[in-house]
Amino acid sequence: MENIFTEKLHSLLFDDLNDNIDWLKKKSIACTLHINTSSSKNYGKKRDLDVKPSIYE
Amino acid sequence: MSNPLFMNDLEELRFGLLQGQECFINSKELKEACKTVESYQNLIDTFKQQLEDFDKNHALDTYVICLTEHKTSNNHGSLSMWRGYGAIGGGAAIIFDTSEIDLRDSKATLIIDKVRYQTDEQRIEWIKSKIIGLANFIKQEPEANKYIEDIVNYFLLRLKIFSLFTKHNGFEEENEWRVIYMSELDTENKFHPWFSYAVTSRGVEPKLKLSIQPNTGVLKDDVSFDKLIDRIILGPINSSLLHENSVKKMLKLLGKHSIAQKIVSSNIPFRI
Image (cartoon, rainbow over all chains, first blue to last red):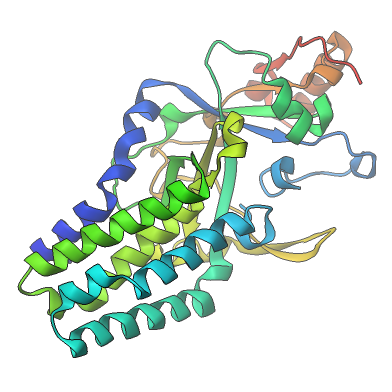
C-alpha cells in the first residue's frame, strides 16, 4: 500500500514516464514488428511468430 | 518476448546499470543528504543488496519486445527497417492497433514506452540529475530514514526502466517502442505460466511466450489477436499479387479469415 511518502517518491522518479501515453491513445496505429518468413529451413513448418521476431536475430 | 541479456542491446542495459551503480555509490549529494554515517551506510548497503537480488532473481526474467513507430497512412514500411529486420525486404511487418492497448491501469505489469536515443554523456547526466533529485528529497523528508528500502527499490526500478528504454543515438532512425516485462513487478506471478525457452542458433534462451488475453493488465477486456492486428504489410521483395494471394490463402486455410483481409503489399521498388 502506498503512503504519502512513497507517492511523492514515485512522482519524483516516474512522472516523466507518462509523456507518451497520450500519443498512444490518439493514434490508432503505432508499431511494426518485422518478421522473417523467408528462411528456407522453415518452409512447411509451423512458425510461432510471436516468440521469435527477427528484429534482433 | 526476449531477454535483453541475449539481445544486441546488452551493452545498453549494462551501461545504464553500471553507470547508475557508480553514480549512486559515489554521490556526495546522497552522502550529505543522509546526515549520519550510519544512515548513509545503510543506504549504500541496501542498494548493493537489492542490486544483487535483481541479478540473482530477476535479471533472467526480464523480457522485451521491440517495435517501430508506424504512421497510419503508410502502407509500405521503411526501407531501412526492411533491410535491417525484415529479411532484406522478403519478410512481413505486423502493424498493431494501439487503441486496443488499455493504459488505465498504471500498475500494469507490462510497461510500454518509446525508446529515447541519447549519447553516453546525456545518459550519465540523466542518472546524475535523478540522484541529485533523490538526495534533495531525502534531505527534505524528515522520515526518509524509515523508508530506505522503498527509496532504493524505487530508484533501482527507475534506473532499470531508463536502461531498457534508452539507446545510443546511432539507432535514432529506428523510432523504436518497447514493451517490457519485469518479474519484480509481477507480484502475483500472473505471467509465470508463460515463462518458456527457445533453442536458437545461440543456444537455449529464456523467452516469455505472452498469450494475447485480457488479464495482462494492458489489453482491453475483449482483446483478441485478430483485433490487435491492424494490417500486415508484405515486404517489397515478396509483394507481387501472386505472393499476396498466396499469403491470404494460407491464412484462410489456417482459419484466420479476418487477418487475411488485412494483408497489403509494400510497393517500394526495392530489389536485391
